[in-house]
Length: 416
Image (tube, rainbow, N blue to C red):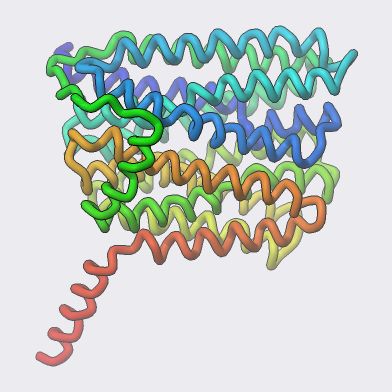
């Protein structure tokens, strides 16, 4: 197996392992239901989701600086991931000790452990896309991401079924201990994928010593140099805001329709089915019609999902919204980094990915925390806001120059 084929296989396997691991550690289904059982407040449940964004924002400049100084990135990335995932095992070990006897302490312990875990999430996009751009040919990127995600989603259906069985048949709190332990084990296996990647070429190393102040000073400069990139980043921020609704569908179902463990297991299954459909469809379409169109369709799906719950209140609307918002996420994960790659030179890619992550995650954290207060007043208001964000995201991601050219061409055709 030559190193090109080897690296493609490792990227493929990474997606499969990661998607299945996050089925067992789903923040929008399993973790939300776990915290609901612990009688956590709406704010605390919203904070768990917001910590994904906050942790990444805090660490983003540090990892951007590190990536730009490395000629080879795979082995360093593997060490970062190993540290992250081993540390979360301490939280998993605390579940059988604290969840039943000291639920408030368990909530606090989980929040602290989850915050530490998500400090490392700031490394994901920068390291991954730098390696992906370097090791995978442009003509193979869309299909590789789509089919690896689709395969992972097929297997995630089995993982969702296992989650349901464990939740129903293993007594509380050992059921969550087992579920989280399986998730972390899969994440540790995923570390090997980056450890085994072969980087034949050395990347160019940035000469500047980028500190926090210089990092934020670079953002307007990048926007001036690449106005199309600026518009994309704004669209992605709206798209991520639309995805925030997913954190509240489970809580809405539990509080409004008294959803139980079977419904939560069904949510994880719906996530798997939506990811299969989204990965295969978006993966094939991305190489045919382009990543911009895929992202527009994904943003529209996210907006429509939230608006369905507002217009047609009911548990079936929540199921549909769960599927559509997951389609939004899979489209974003598949195509956002590649669309940025198409706009930016490879030398500026780590910074471009980091800036997009910073702005999108800040937006997500603000929407998530704000929604945690609004949800106590009305879930419908939360879903209306996130739905409108998804629709506005479509308009922002749309290329105005391409649209203008299409209209001009249509007018010329009509006149002739």
